Image (cartoon, rainbow, N blue to C red; front, side):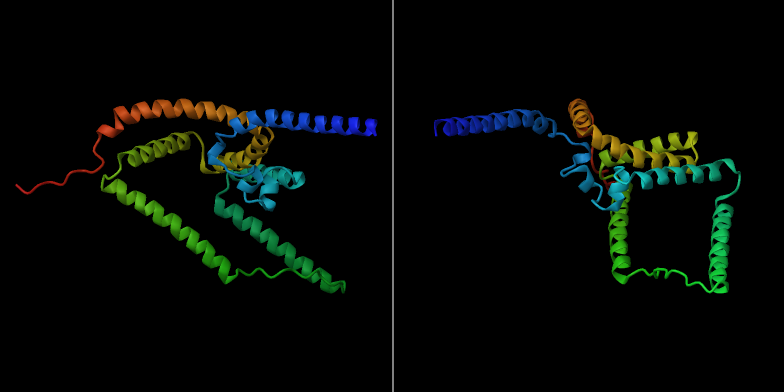
Length: 238
């Protein structure tokens, strides 16, 4: 009985020790999670949608992710190095695909083989309505921003739009559209997986950069932006 009670006490002590270690080890993580990249609330997988696309972006389906990189690289080489136009390449690819499918179907009939049933490619009304509603909201937001900039209502918004457009112009002068699309595809497939692997380190560095940037932005905001008029005064009738 005494040995059992001592073992029980040791077990409880070990459990309390584990809880204490867990609580102390969790504290830095909780502190580092105060700043998360892009204001993320849940896990990286949930932030990316939590479906098959998230599995591909996080390399949980390694073959599909590697295949996406191979396809993107081949497509970039075709568009950039072949010298053919976008319309010519798309027409040639569709032509080859249609011919191969047609020959495959007729070959199966000639050999008295039954082809596998293909799923019907049909867009549901709900899917189209959801896509149209989402697209309408985004377009309305862009039009509202353009309206405010045109009327001179928000100098901060005007400044951000000018800087973004200028950066796009500079980047576009060095790279073509297909090269930018290829770089974006490679980044979208590789960076989420790297961020998921080094999440705590990236969030901690992001927190430091965010604090420094917020401090300098507050100085500029108080010294410059707040002194500028948000609305352009209307001309008074003389």
